[in-house]
Length: 535
Image (tube, rainbow, N blue to C red; front, side, top):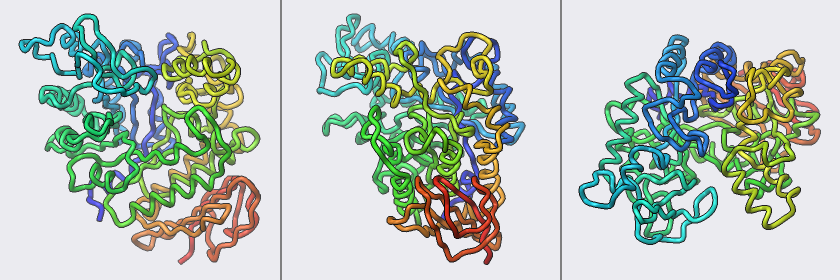
C-alpha cells in the first residue's frame, strides 16, 4: 500500500529545466534564473506542478555545471543566491515545487576541498582523504569521458580517481567528514525551501573496489540513508540516477520503509533505437511498449513509484530515435506521450519535449560543446573518416537536448538577444513553441490535455493498470481502473503502420491526435486516443 506521502507525490508532474538553455533574461546568450522565473506561469498553464533544475551551483563548467566548485553559491552566469530564493518563493506562491540537482559523487578540481586535499597527504591536513588518492593507479578503470580514471597530480605527487572528466575528482565517502559536508549541503538548500533533489549518479558514491566496480559499493545504502533518512530530510521528494535494473535492488533504494529515496530513474527504454549511444539501429515502438509493460508489472504489488520519462539532458530526443520526426512528428510525439504518461508513476517532461523538439544536425564539431561528444569525436576520427564520425556525434550527442529552447521562429528562437552559448537547434524555424501553438496539430495542446486528464481522474494517478495488447500486437492499449466510480481511462496507441484495432470497450473520447471518436477501427500510423470507458 502506498503511504500518504507517496500518494501525494504520485500527483506531481515534473518539468526538467536545463538552465543554460531555457530562457536568457539579460541578453548574454546564457539562460538564467530570472529567465526561468519569467516562464513559471507558462509551466503552470501546461499542467506542471514541480520543476527539476539541473545544476546551477558555482562551477567552471567543464561539464556544464556537473563539476561543482561551491554547492552554496549560484553560477554567476545564472544569477545570484537571491535569485534562487526568489525562484523558490515564486514557485511556492503558485503551489509548485522545486527539485534541485545534487551532485554528490564528485566535485570540480577547483573546489576548495580538492585544492586543500592536493596540498599534502600529511596527517595534519584535515582534507587529505576527502578524495581517493594513491601512489599508483589502484586498477584499470576507465573514465566515462575517455582515458584512465586515474590522474597524476604534480602537487601532491599522487594519483586521484575521477570517474568522469579529469577536472571532476571523486569524493571519498568513506571519510565521515565528507558525509557530514554533504549533509550540510542538503540542509542548506532545505532551509531555503527546496522540496526535493534529483541525485546525480547516486550509485557511485560507494565504490566496490573488491569486485572492480566504481558503483554499488558495500556502504551505498548507509550513505544514502545518512543523507535522506534523517528527520529533517524525510519529507523530501528524492529521485536517484542509478542504473539499477533489478527490482530487488530498486526496492532496496526506494522501498518506503527504507528511509532512503522516493524513487529511481529506470533507464532500460533509453536503449530503444540505438545499439550504443552514438549508433542508431532500426527499432519499433513495440520495444518501448514491452519495456513499459515489464516494469509496470514488476512494480505491481510493491510500494514503489515508477518514473515516467522519455527525454532528459543526457539523451538525444526520443522521437528522433523512435518516431518519425519529419512528416509525422506531431503524431509521433503525441503517441509516445500517451504511451508513457498515462501509466502509474511520476511524469518527467524535459524542456522542449512539450512542443515536439527533435534532434539537430550540424556539419562542424565546432557547433558542439559537450565534453563527452568532443572526446568521442577524437576517438572516432582514429577509426573512420570525419564525415561518418560527425554523423555519430549528431545522432548521440547530449547537445541535442541542451540546445536553447525555441520559443519562436525569430532570432535565436527567441531564447536570447545576444549570441547563444551554443547554436540553437538546426530546425528552430520549423520546430518552435509559437509555431506549434499556432498549428492545428499542436503537440503542446495535446500535452496540456493529457496532463489535465491525469489531474481529473484518480484512475490515472492511483488506479491499477490492465494491459489489453499482447506482445504480437502492433499497438499498445492499456486501461487504468480507478479506486472509485470516477471512471476507467483507456489509452490506445498505434505504432508505425496502419492497424485494425478491435477492443471490446466503448466510451467517450477525451483526447485524440487524429480526431477519433470510437475505440475500435482502423488506426493510422502513430494514431493515439484516450477514452473514458463506460462502466
